[in-house]
Amino acid sequence: MASKPSVPRGTRDFSPAEVSKRQYIMQTIKSNFEKFGFQPIETPSFENSDTLMGKYGEEGDRLIFKILNSGNFFYDKSKKIELPESIEALQVNSAETIDLNQRIELNRFTSRISEKALRYDLTVPFARYVVQHQNDIVFPFKRYQIQPVWRADNPQNGRYREFYQCDADVVGSKSLWQEVELVQLYDTVFTALGLEGVTIKINNRKILSGIAEVIGASDKLIDFTVALDKLDKIGEDGVKKEMVEKGISEEALVKVQPLFSFSGTFADKIKQLSELLAESEEGMKGVEELKFICDNVADLGLSTAILDLDVTLARGLNYYTGAIFEVGAPKTVSMGSIGGGGRYDDLTGIFGLKNMSGVGISFGLDRIYLVLEKLELFPETVVAASKAIFLNFGDKEALYASKAIQKLRKENIKVELYPDNVKVGKQFQYADKRLIPFAVIAGDQEIASNTYSLKNLVTGDQVSVDFDGLKNALLS
Image (spheres, rainbow, N blue to C red):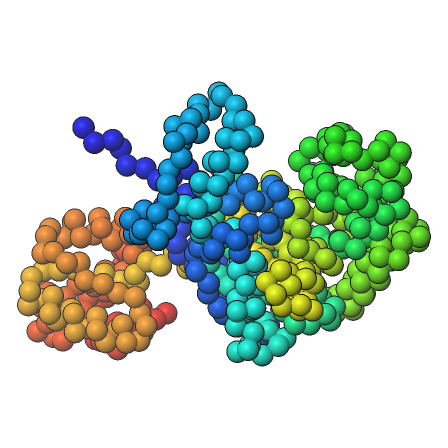
């Protein structure tokens, strides 16, 4: 007996209603990307492994899906792999420990048979794209990209192994006005989706570097920021414990204590940071950048979003060098971040293109979907049901109906013909299950008078109309 079919953990099928809702979100984001001057690009679903590895930190690298080579790889004599005699020894049980030599041999073997990997995000592939196509690009280059990414993460609510990202980036400009515009873009999109009260958290990696400097832990910057970024998940005690485990001294933790109790307005927090970082040139640069962004956003105003300075916001990715963004859902919904991004001054440098600053943000489509669903913010018109169904009474009647259907579709009216000549009751049941609001009856009597009987399946009312009357009724 065949086993029941299923999808891999962390992936999902989407129903017609779910796809319609997802497309509504993507179209809202896309239209505002274009309104802000961003242009679309697409990149392959998988990249060369060396394009991705080493760009996301140790934790990120572990979550990259590698692809085994296939096709003629094992049959091409020029690439043929001589399997080590000890390969069976490398296939150890999970309970056994792989010694160092075995691990080296296993890594050597797997690296030769997995030269490609599914993309982890859209930013690193974008950097690769910029370097590869730099002679064809007009800088500053504003691009947007809406495509799926893959992470070998532990699936849970709002976290999947396959999911879409919706990114907007500007590369080739160091102007902080780009950050100001990206804050406005977040506000514009979430306002258009009816998702009011999101919090756009902002920090700056220069501030984090400055804090690490003043507490004497500059050599532990990555360990410091990775631990700090987990504050929401493991709490203050958990963060301190991890910092100590990474070699950050107890004395440094005393100096960093003010981070855990920052409060007040944006301006109040800027003042506190200025006092804490007075001895750090790098830290004060970060303070000045944040103040510029905050002051100009305040002057321009936001429609429904809230901009907040979060000094514990670190984000573990290695490539951020300036502003860092993270968007939190309204407090009425328990959900992780629904967007994030930041400034990366040297990302393209790892691919050979120096001095090309960039900044970008991402929208978390799947989590935004869950938030809109929980708050019942999807418009009723989003689900793409037909406006009317023409009942089928036979080939002659179906042809008469099809001529009207053809003309209605040219008017962008969603209509369809029930394909089979079956009992009328079954056709009405189909329309009810599909949530189609109108049925059009075209039998001998209607053909003779060149009319149509239009039945409202919600109220039960039925009227006889000519084609113009039918069109106007379905357009209303």
